[in-house]
Image (cartoon, rainbow over all chains, first blue to last red):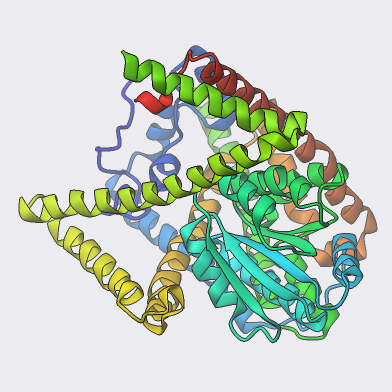
Length: 303
Length: 207
């Protein structure tokens, strides 16, 4: 069995000529075969065998141009759908979820002027999802006149914190970068200035775990989290254990917050795009399954 | 040999100290534990500087030897020197310096955002190619993916209330169970690693 190597030119026009330019591209261009016997068995769940896929996708001269046109149209469709939220505005308000109600109640329960330690643990790549939500959370904290102390264990976090807190009406102090991951978080909890609450803002599962485990108990103050949607299930365990009082996550929460504050903005538009893209994903899954069914019927008929 | 033994002894003693301080709650252990934590963060900061120096050194070598892609290396070195220079010159406000903020806001942010935005194309491509119900396991996975995508739509939740409950249940039960299992696995793995370091069986600090 010949297996595709990373050096071989891709038969797939996906980023043609730019192989390995993106980390995900090699893993998506062809279904991967895992080398172990267990891997080969498990592979059945993930992708059809390589030979089958290769035979199916082997380009013939006539098919190639249509194929390219198909890819081009498909990618254009993804682009149009992804941008739809910015052109078609639904304007409908999104009712608050129980998560958001808990979170706003938590912020309201903080005494006015409480200093809040904000651990900003996300980079620019996650900014599209977290910025709209954090902006609304900061608006709410500003209404409570809460002072902010920002800190991060990753270099980009400091820049992101600086960017997000510009123009914040109450005092903001940057505690800077805390290298050493767990040691940094633990040190800031044990020896940082006194605070009234901790807010963990992240899209990074490791940083999230480090802050909850190393800082929450040691600080002895109520804690909450502003997360990317991918981290929401992980937060449930900490929420149920009482380590986190409230958690909000993703663009959905940003849109709900905007509706609650009566300020439609980027969160609502982003949610619209995301929902349109979800529809497209459902369509892609269904189309893939129809194609699979047709291929199997044809193969059965030919045999 | 003596050097190795000393390093192992130091690692074992410091690990024991940091583990014992929260477990036993002895106030006498707090000052040395605090000191060790400070050392760790200071060493972490130097490791970051070392990493940057190593990266720059590597790319300087590529430029000097005119290896493939040396032009990209010069771009990297130039960007690093310019941004670091803006942030470090005497009287600079560091990360709050307008030029540094400009580079962060108008160069780095759009570049990273663009790179991540490409994942939309990958995800749609992956959904078409990989989520195919050609076995019972894949059928379950595909059905799960479609259910999550459908149940998260606010209009669906409003017009059909069980969708919201189903969405919540999926997050609270199967996802949370999987992630708890993962967290427990990580915790057990960390415990195993810590024990290996404590017993001196694994010495990553000597590599």
